[in-house]
Length: 169
Ligand SMILES: Nc1ncnc2c1ncn2[C@@H]1O[C@H](COP(=O)(O)OP(=O)(O)OP(=O)(O)O)[C@@H](O)[C@H]1O
Ligand SMILES: O=C(O)[C@H](O)[C@@H](O)[C@H](O)[C@H](O)CO
Image (cartoon, rainbow, N blue to C red):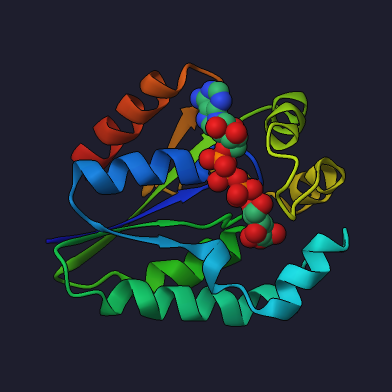
């Protein structure tokens, strides 16, 4: 069974850090959704303009196709996947041989702002955190393919919780 694991949540929650560690653990291909954004999307975010559904849909479709088409046994991706309708696009990769799973990293607004400020050279500034949270639809209990992890813990603990979640798929 091929596993497609999305590490998701708002800007600064720790997606890249956790996904990097998960991909090493599984010797899996690692896809950074930020590197799949169009230059128009990156320019908008760099200018402090939140993305809209219309900006995100083509990007999500591309990610879903990329995830489905990787040849390896597993693939780990970062993706904000803020809304349920976005996660539903990514779920289209599910089939008899492939299982999609989400590891959602949960942080409070203040924690997100502190994390985003730790990387001052990133295009996503702390002023964008509120718009990320406005769009966020936290996963609900009926989304059985999502593991929610407290990302405020030390990174080793967050990574080990993410690995346990991935093991249970
Ligand atoms: N558990 C943790 N404890 C402390 N710092 C952390 C933890 N996880 C990540 N960080 C730090 O928080 C910052 C944001 O992490 P990271 O870049 O992985 O987040 P991200 O969700 O990928 O962000 P973005 O999508 O905006 O690029 C980095 O400086 C990272 O080193
Ligand atoms: O859906 C979105 O608004 C974007 O994917 C953002 O979440 C950022 O690209 C990412 O987190 C980098 O900071």
